[in-house]
Length: 403
Image (tube, rainbow, N blue to C red; front, top):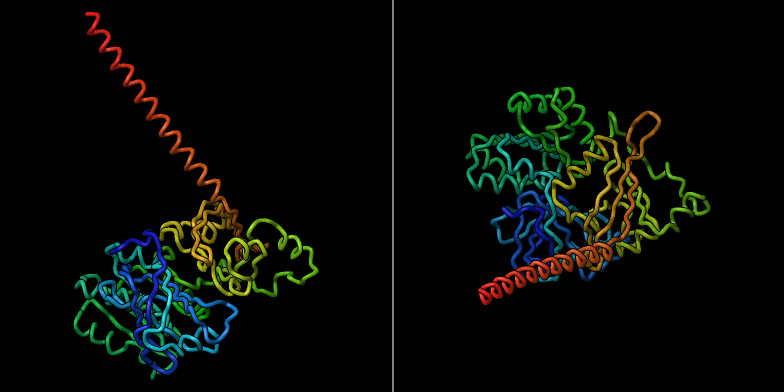
């Protein structure tokens, strides 16, 4: 499979169809104009070039890919809402243009590349990344044990139910459990008892993730075996900062100082959702504050490898230390830039991580100058070596002549 560290691209694409799966939930099929390859579990950004309804958060959103890598069609799940983006999307017709950005790294990469058993827990449409993985692995006749717990809002929400049941009937190493309402502690304990050495993956809304986290702790599941995609637990050592906790009145010294600093500054909650972005962040990324707020930094990032982001989260969240590193990002216009990034946890007096403050400094020109200097030095060294080699040859010839 392609690796998520491969260069991410921008693809012109067309809408094939929008198929209603259940009430207000749709499967969208997209075809790119040029070949598009991805790994199971990766995600993309889908941009609508011609928005019908305005949206303060802009014309693109991130979606997990549900199709398998050997499928020639990109499939995603779209849940309807009153946002300008979603309303514009649902007005699209077959062959209408779209722009696909990606693919971007998968939080499932470690599990896919290993041999461990896998337990997936997802609420509603949050099972989307698992669909791609299940389709891929069982298409390859995997012998690994895979356990999926899908928690639905109500019994009538049959999202991929028949397909998943058919896979379970055909493959004895796949267990598919459906329940509705809230996560069930008994189901979590049963899955752990059946596959005690499995890697766990949890996706869903914040309250859902917090509940599953509590049940996993009660079942004594090693936290190092548990992975989260979008939302992380906000209980235990973590409790998320709220926008009301920030002193963002226009006259506050804090806001005046940070707004005018030349460094890109964002403040996020515990899951990385941006609560505040200064003017320099708008200038560096090309996105307006309205587009940035409510998104995560993957709006302009996501280009680094899965291992990079795993280390980032381990440093800033688990170890509660600042993460300082050079990082490659992409501006709204598609231009790549290199930044010196510092991301530090915001920790209260009780030692709980509430959120993060991140800064970026554009060092693209500095990095290019360093690369150019290295090339020049390499050329100079090669010239020196060639000169020495030529002098030695001349000396050898002169010696033969004198002899």
